[in-house]
Image (tube, rainbow, N blue to C red):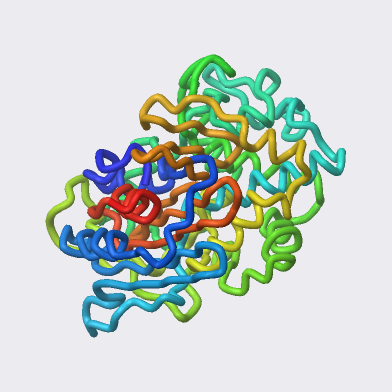
Amino acid sequence: MSTRRTVRTTLVAATAVALSAALAGPALAAPGKGGEHGPTRQAVEAAVKDGVPGVTLTAKDGRAVWSTTAGVGDLRSGKPRSADDRYRVGSITKTFVATVLLQLEAEERLSLDDSVDEWLPGLVRGNGHDGRAITLRQLLNHTSGIYNYTADETFGRTYFLKDGFFEHRYDTNAPEDLVAVAMAHKPDFAPGTSWNYSNTNYVLAGLVIEKATGRPYGEEIRRRVIEPLDLNGTSVPGTRVGVPQPSSRAYSKLAETATGPTYDVTKLNPSLAYSAGEIISDSADLNRFYSALLRGRLLPPKQLKEMKTTVPVGVIPNTGYGLGLMDRELSCGVHVWGHGGGIHGSTSEAVTTADGRHSLAFNFNGDWSGDADAVIEAEFCGK
C-alpha cells in the first residue's frame, strides 16, 4: 500500500491512506522467473494468515500467465475469491489520470508547466494555497504542497470510521467540495520545495481533464485507455455504488485499530475518491495496462520520459514518484514501476518491469492487514 505496513495500522491509515498514501511501484527490466511462483503463493497465503479475508493475484511474464487465489471472497458463505474478480483499485486510478493528461500534452492541448489557475481559475485559493503558483506537473508528482483532503479529521470521521461511514456511505461528493476541504487547511509546503502525497492533487487533475476536453474525465479514460486496450473488466463508476460481477465482498474494521468487528463495506459511493481513486478493474487488466504503458503504447517517448522522471519519496526507501507512476528498487536490485491503491475494504498493487515483460497485480479484500510488499518481493526476487 503506502508507507507500507505502518499505514495499515489504522483505518484512516488503511483507507485514508488507502486513498491517501496508497502507493506502489518501481523501475528496470527484471530477468524472467519462468514458472517459479512458489514464493509468491506462500506470500499470498501468509497474507491470509495475517488476517486478510482473501487474495486474488495474476502475474504475467512474457506470454506465460499465472494466477492464484487464497482465502475467501465472502465471509458469510465461504465462497472463494476468483482470479477474474473485479475490485476497487483506489489510487491506481492516478496512473490512468496522469496518462490522459500526458496524452493531452502530447496533443498540445495543454502544457504540464501551465498553472493550475489557468485551467481552474480561483479554485485553489485560501489559507496560503495559490493555484497561480502551482503547475500541473506539481499536481501529478505530488510536489504542489496542496493539503490532502482525506487527511482532514472531519472527513475521516465522516467516511472512514464506523458511525460516519454507515450514515454517509451513499453520499455524492462534488469534486469542488473535496478541494474545498483541502483549502480549509494551510499548504504542507511551498510549491516545488518538498514531496507529500495528496489526493487533492488528482481531484484537481481530473477537473483539468474535464476543462481541457469538455467531457467527464472518466469518459476520456474510457476513450483513450480502456477501449483501445480492451480492458473489459475496468470501469470508472462515478456514483455507482456496487462492484460489477465477478467480484468478492470488501471488508474493513472502520476503526482506528486493526482489531474489533469486521464490516462489509462493498457498497459505497466512490465520488468521495473521484479521480484520485474511484476506478474498478481486475488483475489481468491492470497487468495489460501497465505493460502497454511502459512499452510506449499509450504515450509518445517524450511524455513517457516525463512520466518516469521521479522525485524522491522520503517515507518509502528506494522509491521515486514520477507522474502518477512509482519506481521502486526491490531487495534483489530489480526495479519495478507501478502504483498501489486502497479504498474501503480493498488494498491493491500493480507493478511491472520497465520493459513491460513481467507484470504483477493483486488485491486484498480487507484494508487492515497483510504484507503487500512481501508479495511483490516474492514474485520478482523469489523471496
